[in-house]
Length: 169
Image (cartoon, rainbow, N blue to C red; front, side, top):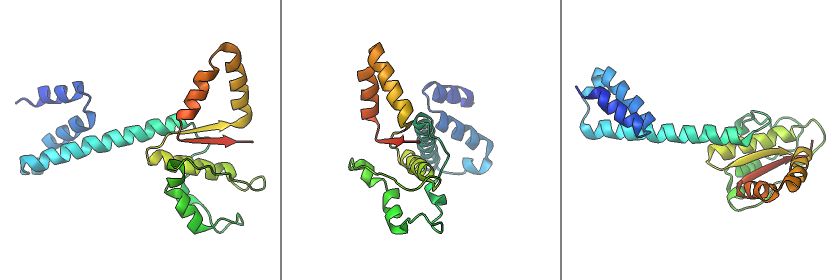
């Protein structure tokens, strides 16, 4: 049949998720019983899912988060003074889309960086660009960039980022 050329065409068109789903359908006899529309819908859904997960992986990689924190793992029992409803509102990331700032303060060792990384992770999962920078290192980088002529390029990169996490540690 024309299965291998079809797979090669899908891969050459960079439809990797769809090609994988098609190959999987070829191996499953119950998938052969589905209508054309159902099979095509499954292929398109698989491609969309593949692209979304690839984009999330890329956003997380570019974010360079210091810790792999997740907002679902926030411990509200600890004496951090976190309000569960306020954190739930922040998890939506509407404050990022509205171009608002968030300043996390507290004593040393209370998990400020971890919570900031958790919000960064959540923003990446929602398709927003994130960048984690330690403030002293960023200032050094900008000082060096000013000397070598790449200062405006670095500032433009930071300006295009949806969420910039500055850690003062």
